[in-house]
Picture 1 (tube, rainbow, N blue to C red):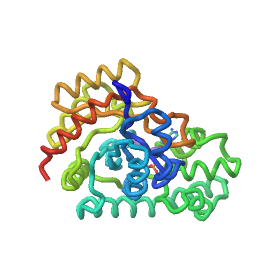
Picture 2 (picture 1 turned 120 degrees about the horizontal axis):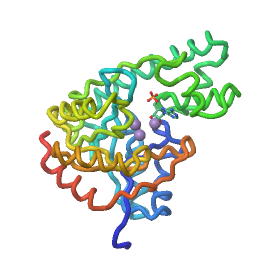
Picture 3 (picture 1 turned 30 degrees about the vertical axis):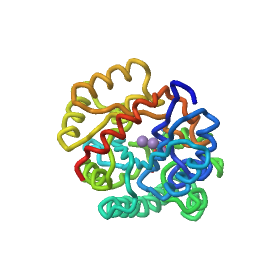
Picture 4 (picture 1 turned 45 degrees about the horizontal axis):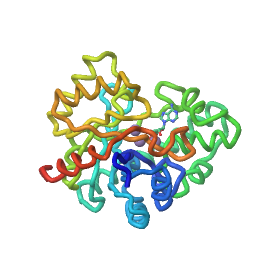
Length: 285
Ligand code: AMP
Ligand code: MN
Ligand code: MN
Ligand code: MN
């Protein structure tokens, strides 16, 4: 084994909006030379069992994770909390997942109706076919729009229609952050703020205020390594993590061919996983 093995603590499968089935991710992780992989699908743990057995077969360390959609306060950016080492059968986490899937079920037909009003005929069935049994996310709607020739790419669909403030944007009622952190802890997990850059804070003071509040609510970690973070942002977020006593996490945010991101493309060292494991021992359930 490599002396300085890389890991990836942020990846999606077809259980949410990735394009690779959870059973097939471990082989890709092995090929990428990863020593560990966290499956962090949006608002579901449905892929855990398949990914765990695949990881065991190729001797990649498996971390059962989740990425919970939370309320931002100001709605413009994404507030996503990562849970690592969560037990998907925990009652509190199951309730949270149920609430978030209801929110997705309610939003999808509203977006479809909005697109129809905008002169783009598309049906809920066409979107459901894209999701293939998973809870519907905007990337599935974007893919269906691309298939029908309405947009050039998934990214184009977000820029023109689905992104915040765009004509087919529909707000989804997500989780209060304190409830998400509590659910992750009750499920035996460690809670980290995902990709701080995507909060789209007005200035550094606002970011620090948000992180300070989350730390008071029990947040354990901060995602410092992420595809959207350059070296400057990594240094800034690492300093914030140190200031608020948060551990460091990181990953690629792999989505298969739905995004131009390679599994294992972030330089996340194995030592971070050891720190996560230690933190897990001290989490108050
Ligand atoms: P949802 O959870 O259904 O609101 O959809 C959010 C997901 O859409 C994120 O997890 C990303 O995978 C994807 N996404 C968000 N913004 C963009 C964008 N501008 N371009 C491409 N994908 C995006
Ligand atoms: Mn996604
Ligand atoms: Mn996210
Ligand atoms: Mn993600």
